[in-house]
Image 1 (cartoon, rainbow, N blue to C red):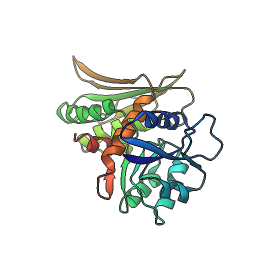
Image 2 (cartoon, helix red, strand yellow):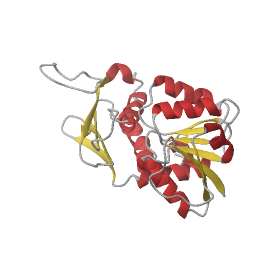
Image 3 (tube, rainbow, N blue to C red):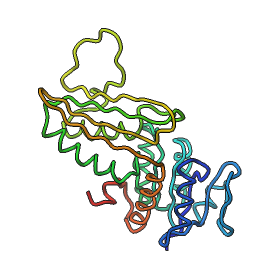
Image 4 (cartoon, helix red, strand yellow):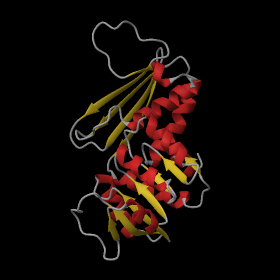
Length: 256
């Protein structure tokens, strides 16, 4: 039985992690970290705290679905002598957050994924092969999310684009295009388009297209519920608890 702490239990995905942990026979919800009062009831005996040190000391592993600043705060405290296996599903991270994750992973096992969906993990594996094999095909990625999402493009879309760029030995920062308007000229050979749509309550749709002369190939992953991400995170936590210090991906946990 793994005793987990949920960092950001008041968030949309964090609450789902709490609900699923209650039902699990392999995981026990030991503590939750919140900045404000919870707007839902929680089982007696579960520690509710806004003290990060107390939170980290109370559990065997942490699941984090918060904000970039929240993840940064968590890692900085954990590195001060409170290391725990940490599964990070926070999106919108910037380069300095990713560097902090790498540094923290020297002291504890960390699994970071912009999307905890098992289907997206398999999609990442598939598109790497396609991108390298169909080298002359144009790559376009389109993601759709609910109107409350703040970051754009989504972390998942950027991860998919990075997979394609790496497969072609390209620097994504140099070839990514995330907007087109006006007379911009012809599409560049190595260009990777990453476009965003926002509306309604869409949990997440990611389409990766490979467009050639006379044919095209498209992959589409649709998340019909945010519970998909919570389930993936708990599955990853069960795997991560037995790993040595280091930085892992969702693909690692699935042995892909």
